[in-house]
Amino acid sequence: MSSIYLLHKPYLTLSQFTDAAPPDGVPRATLAGLITIPGIYPAGRLDYDSEGLLLLTDDGALAARITHPKHKQPKTYWVQVEGIPAPSALESLRKGVMLNDGPTLPAKARVIAPPSIPERTPPIRSRAGIPTRWLELTIIEGRNRQVRRMTAHVGHPTLRLIRVAIGGWRLDGLAPGQWRRETLHAPVAAPSRRPPGRRR
Image 1: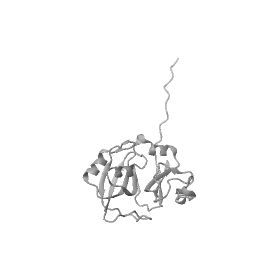
Image 2: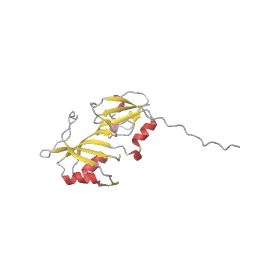
Image 3: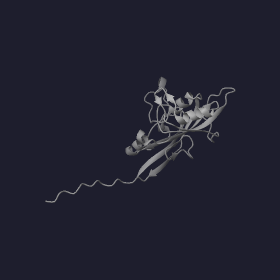
Image 4: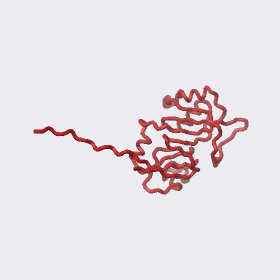
């Protein structure tokens, strides 16, 4: 039986409990200001300027199952982009795009209605005469700033990025800074059996 904590990481918050290298000596917000459960640590990360679901646990084996690339946990994001993506841009995301560190795996991508979420503080930058759209994008990789690089590659820079799901865990019902605990009842591995020895 393991515990996992689902946290809605706010914008401009590090996905760690300490800030070892604050720029210009000014400390940044960390998880220590949001959750004080002893002995837990993030299973994965979420960029400082991204928002949404972050998983934390005190179970190292569980953290490894969540984060190891071989398990390919799908991660779903709501992405506000600049401009109106054409069907060809969405199709490029679905097929995979070529980034400077190699091609991405195919993603799920679709336009969605603006989600019912709180306004960001500070708000996104806006440019007169340039509309924005929201996409739902699901990937099974975890490269550095991958979603932002993918949308920029197809001509639509990301303005706001919110992770709403990791595997079967969802952000539903959590406001920025809120968290909840879930208990996992994992099956116990059967003890190994030695082959019977030879009779004499």
